[in-house]
Image (cartoon, rainbow, N blue to C red; front, side, top):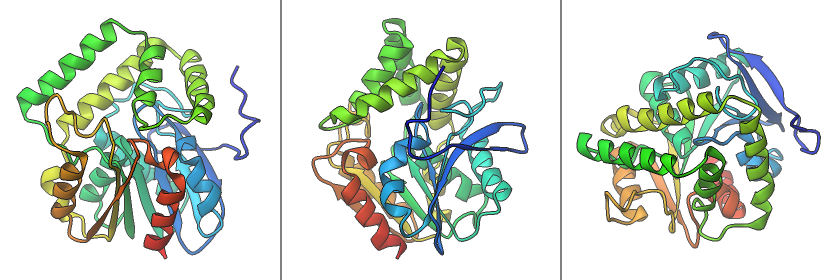
Length: 286
């Protein structure tokens, strides 16, 4: 049994058109609504430090994507197209206005995919260490998938999750342990087979559904944030370049984007340096 009562933000639920019952946090009010989309194998609470501060100025909504967090598990393909459709339907179901989409890691690729399919889905865009700026040839994609399969053979899902979160920080904060243990509790409450299917499908989706070549279609003002010490982007076994190089090349493709590199910070920048991320978001949104 997972107890969510210790969390300051209550979970709400809404059923999407595809039948998925998704959980979300909905706090604050204001002229703008920021809709936060989490990364691979996490949940809406990974944005809690943004909600803590930004709810004073804006309505802040953080979704648990289907197959993740406290949302339904189901027989979905868990592609970027699928998740993009879920986010758009979520906005429609809640009748959100003046929406600003914010995506972290895989969630960044999801919201970029959404804007390439529905050009007016958001007024502004916030990308935190987004996947999708780094591109992979078919051979590189095959190498990437093979590496992940090899790692899975020698590690349990719980150990893989712990390790992937730990390596997402430049300096791991002890207070993140609570979030890790909650995610493991959630994992234990569902089928391991379904969890692995979701992870594999998400990784395949990020690799097989690139967004880079269509970034020029995104016209909205866009804030791009990366941690300078991101150990996940790029994959340095395949692309021995800096995170800043990947970030700058991606930003060049967008019509109206600005880049901020967060010093002494890893991939999970909204949890490692929340004060800097929040300040950048407030300045950007206005």
